[in-house]
Image 1 (cartoon, protein in one colour):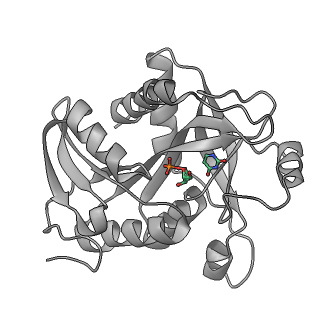
Image 2 (tube, protein in one colour; image 1 turned 90 degrees about the horizontal axis):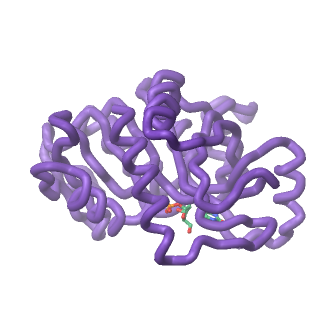
Length: 233
Ligand SMILES: O=P(O)(O)O[C@H]1O[C@H](CO)[C@@H](O)[C@H]1O
Ligand SMILES: O=c1cc[nH]c(=O)[nH]1
C-alpha cells in the first residue's frame, strides 16, 4: 500500500516519527543515530527511514518546507501508516532578544499567518499547541542531557522573506521566541486526527540581529537537538 506521496507499506513506520524539514538531514540522522535503519520511502526524494534507538523503534521522515508540505506528510503518516507521535526537529530563526543562535527551543504553541487552522474552526482562532506529554518528555530529556532550553510561543510563517521586517519586532513584544514554517500546520493536523505532536528547533539565525550559525557549527547544534528528541521517546 502506498499514498500519493509515500511509497512505504503498512508497518514500515514506527508509531513515533521525527520530522526534519530537509530530506538529507533525515538520511543523516538515520545513518548516525539509529541502529538497523532502512529506507522505507523516497517519493520525490522526501526520504523516510525506520530503525531503532536504544532498542525502541523510531522513524525519521522529512517534511519538506512549509505548512502545505508538512501537512501532506503528517496526514498520510497518521491516516495511512498509523503514526501516533510526530516530533518536528527543525531549524528556526530567533526573534526574542534573549534568544541566541544555537539555542534549543520547544514550541509550546505556534501562531501563524497561514489560514489553515482558522479554516478548521469556521474562521475563528485556534490555539495550536504541543502535546503536553511529548513536551514534558522533551524538556526532561534536555535537562538530563544538561542542555538549557527555551519553551514558548513560536510563529509559523508562509513567508521566509518578510517584506516588512518590523513585523518581527511586533512578535518580539508579544513574547514570540522564534519563527519557522511548519509547526502550526503540524499541530493543526495532529489535533484534527487526534494524535500527538511537538516541535523543537535549533536556532540557525536571528532574524532581528542578523546573526547566523557558521555552517560548520550547524551540525553540532543540530546533533544536540536530535539527541534530545531521541532520548525523549
Ligand atoms: O530546517 P527546517 O526543518 O527545514 O526548518 C526551517 O528551515 C526552512 C527554511 O529555511 C523551513 O522549513 C523552516 O521551518
Ligand atoms: O523559518 C525559518 C527558519 C530559519 N530562519 C528563518 O529566518 N526562518
